[in-house]
Image (cartoon, rainbow, N blue to C red; front, top):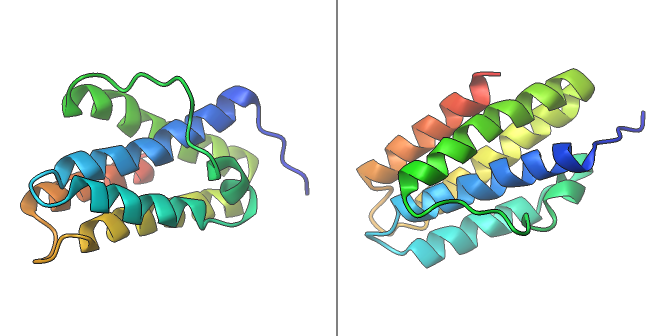
Length: 134
């Protein structure tokens, strides 16, 4: 089965996944935000299937805002929307997207030497909650 996503659908997936990476990086700023971002970005670019093709590049021209709250206001609903559109159009790819994002979240959390900080743990919970809300 061939799945055709619109440009807007692909942007939603990219905004959601790459935004989750940015949220985890922001939550890990007390440790190494750069390392968290790098580890989780590698997880996204390692995705396969339709999700892998879409996430192979980060979204261009997206303004995430100046605060983590502004970023979360865009990314968390985008995660829910991405899951909803994939569940409707390609249920197997919805599972693939969810697992890919969660692997990226886990990769970011593991980048912190002493284990994930409380802020990273809480951000991971919010991301998981948004994925499961669809």
